[in-house]
Amino acid sequence: MTTAPQVLTTPVLAARRYRFSASLIDGLIFSIVLSPVYSLFYDDLEMADESISVSYLNPYAGNPYWPVDVAISGLFAVYFWLQHAFWGQTPGKRLYRLKVVSRTTGESPDLRQAGVRALVYPAVMLVPYAGVLINLVDTLCIFFGWKRRCLHDVIADTVVIDLSDPGRRGIGFLFGLGVVLVLTTVFLLVYVMPG
Image 1 (tube, rainbow, N blue to C red):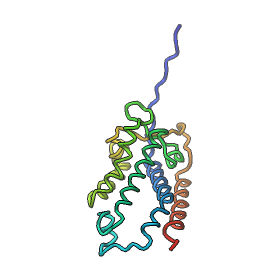
Image 2: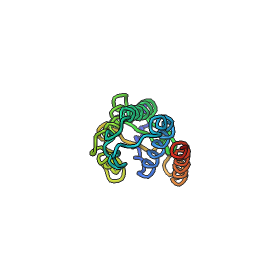
Image 3: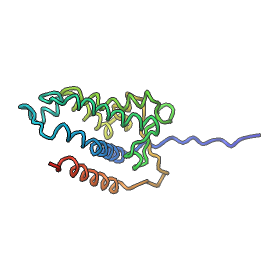
Image 4: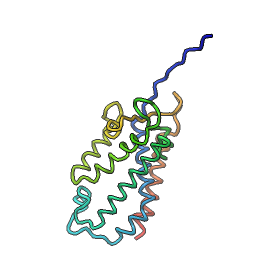
C-alpha cells in the first residue's frame, strides 16, 4: 500500500509592515490597560530637576517611583510571555494573522523560548541610557534585520510567520493603522487628558 507524498510548505515570514503595526497595537493595548496604574502614581509627580529626555534615558533619575516602572516592565514581559507560550499570538498578531513560532520546530514557542523572547524588551529598557538605543536597534531589525528577525527573535530562536492563505491577506494594512489610531485616541482620552 502506497501513500501519497506529503508536500511540505515553508511558512511565509510576516511582512514587516504587519509585524510593526501588530507591535504598535499590542503596545497601545498594554498602555491603555495600565493607564489607571500610571495615574495612581504619576499624577502630581514632578521629576526632580531632570528633563523628560534624561528621565526616559535613565528611568531611575529623579523618579521615586522607579520600582513601579520595574514592576510594570515585569507585567509587560508576562503579557507577551504567556500569550506567545500558549497561542503564539497577541491581540495585535491575531488581528494581522501573524504567529510567533520556534525557528527549529515551527510550533508555538515553549515556555522557555517565549520567556526569553518576552524578557528582552523590558529588561533592556531598564538599562540606563543604553537600553533605549538597544531597543531602537531591536525594533529597526524588523526592517533591516536578520531575515525579518529582531534581536529578541534571534536570542529566543523564533520567527514570526504569516498565517494568511497565499494570495489572500487578512485585514488590510490601512484598516490596521485605523485600529492603531483608535487605540491611540482611547489612550489619550484615558491616560493623558483626565487631569
